Length: 100
Image 1 (tube, one colour):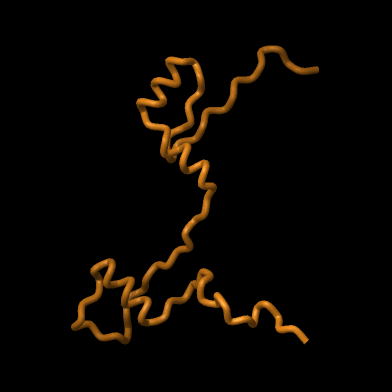
Image 2 (cartoon, helix red, strand yellow):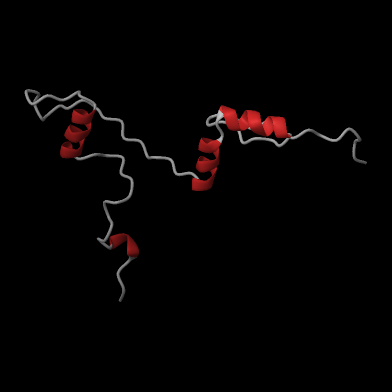
């Protein structure tokens, strides 16, 4: 009989976990400069551990490449430029004649 894939050990800790071990919490607090060696290890403050968002690499590369200079050059050429990072793209203009 084969082993269920959820019971396999390989890569078990590589996925996102909501609860950190005490050592991981201490490391995170040290990075945030909220932990000193004098502090007790018991009763540590909470540490926010958020899952990193994954997006398409191409979309990020295009958004990063859309600098104000490139947007101005594209506007002068009459081609629509990609929106800057964190901005929404304007909706396309609708045709003047209504469809029947």
